[in-house]
Image (cartoon, rainbow, N blue to C red; front, side, top):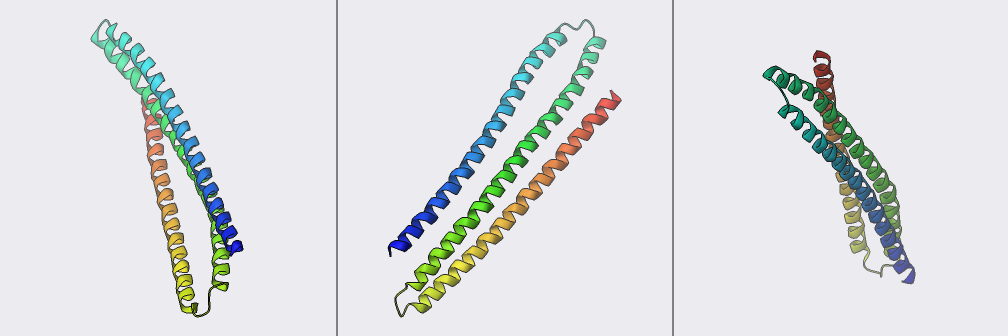
Amino acid sequence: MNNTFEKITATSKAALETAQALASKAQASAEKLTELNMTTAKAALGESVEKAKAVMGAKDPQALAAMTADMVKPLAEKSAAYAQEFKKIVEDASADFTQTAQANLADVQKGFATLMESATKNAPAGTESAVAFFNQAMTASQNAFKTAQTSAQQAVDAAQANFSAVTKQATDAVKKATKSA
């Protein structure tokens, strides 16, 4: 009985450590996104004030039109650069998260399987059908979890592909606008 308790404790500890590692990675990624957003907002605010002052100093409509045209190109370039950096942070976080989750999840599942094997060996006589049912239920739940994990990974991959396509379109649009300007 004590051996089973130790296995439960070890499995629980491994699951807790996995959760902590995943939470730390999520927090680090959120910090990177926050830093990117704050840096971008600070730069945008400073540039907006400068551009507003320049627009107010325009002497005639032609000068105002020229200033407006000159503002579009850098804005498009900065938007594309922001989108690329955002994409990189999200992709890195997703890869780290997936790698950590999969590695640690395999260990937790192995520990749980060992625990279940030990519990079924020590089950009282006459409970074989209940133990068999429980083992089938556990196998079915693990299969369902693997299916959900695969579906989640496919959704992440699809979202990353869509985000990459949008970023590429924005970058291409900036390049086209830059060439024509």
